[in-house]
Image (cartoon, rainbow, N blue to C red; front, side, top):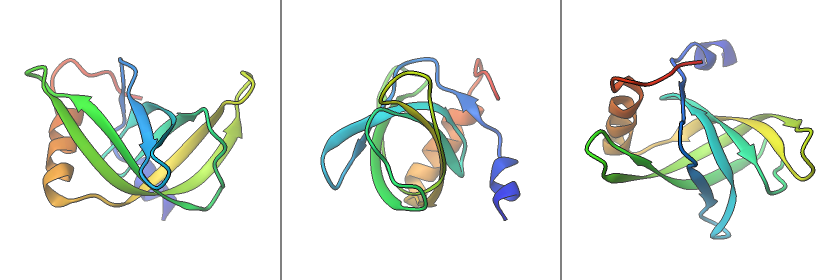
Length: 116
């Protein structure tokens, strides 16, 4: 089942996109890449493998406007980075409002993106 999620097209995030845990209202890291079904997060806060999270982040659309996203996510894997206090983490989205899912799909498919 996880393979199915990894087949989704993943777009690199060229800018710093901070991710906030909505339960604690604290920044937990920044997005490395995004797909319709999940994201790779470079975590700067301790996270628990196999836990569920509610995150908020903003992406700039092709007109330069900031689009807000709030997603439910399941932490699938965690790998400590060489930088102290950082980890590479893989999340699968479990809840994305339909209108935000459409905006995310548009952002991923927009011209000029680089893909993993």
